[in-house]
Length: 419
Image (cartoon, rainbow, N blue to C red; front, top):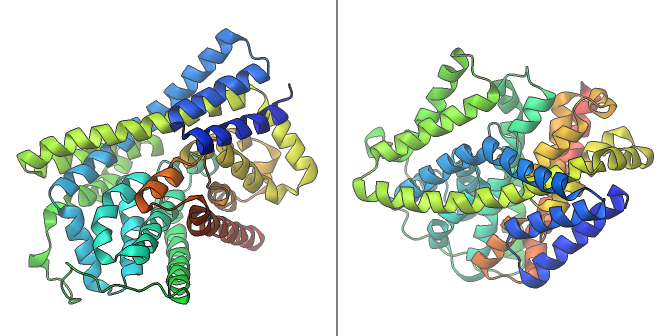
């Protein structure tokens, strides 16, 4: 069968299994990889080899990063330091929507995972509201964590794009351009969530457990809560001075942050954090490895040539990266794997050559936001945490992220036409 229709049949199968039977992503996506390989006539031995290679590649790229981030988050949570960080943010803002969204935005960067940030922050931010108001705040965490995870270097979703399309670009310069953009985008969505909540008469609760709004003196800061993040920042210039590549640098700085969290922790927090962090990281790693297996088969099946030819024959060149990333994101749900796969398909092609690297990165990132539905593991995690049904999830999660993707694509077009 031609790779393009086989791809869409695989997408339907994965979506059905995800909706009807809630099959865990590692099994659903690996099964989808087998199904796609069989449909495209791939020999059995080659199919198994491609699947294991796809699993292994994603593991080697991101296992240490995700494990380090999960350990940092778990150790800090064991000691109550996450609560302290949110409390410190609360001192500078009395708006629970801002506290929730900004907490998700900030924590997703050092822990290198939007899912981890959401899981860790959820029980803390629940103290800012109750009922429907609490649910909206949880969505603010999710949106905030996804915006930073999908746009800011050095998260696993951004690293493959920068390495493929702008290897000589300074990470500091990239973030100097992207961080203001991402914060403006976050602010817009927090305002929309707050306006939407008030228009429906959802009562805003007075935050509890967070004292005052006065600024914090240096003596009041819990430096242990920020030590892993400080070390991560300090390790960046050291790694660059040693001549580390972008890929090696992120591994080293995340390991340095995790080591700092473990060393500065109390014995009880150290033991509990290592156990919980390792367990949580394992779930995330296996999920994205399943997506890596599907990504490997997609590439080996000839999908890239078939899809790229079909898309470029229908759509203008400037739309191709956005459409391609949207299709891949819809199929397997992992933003990390979407970045890896889209970069692999487009690198060295006339499409990539025709678009400014910075605009190209934003276009692909935009595509990662557009269809966040049943193949997205984060979709089900938020559903379980909030208790919302499918219709509410679409209204409060899928549609806002789609709007985010469209807004980013418009910004990318503006960048392309200005440079």
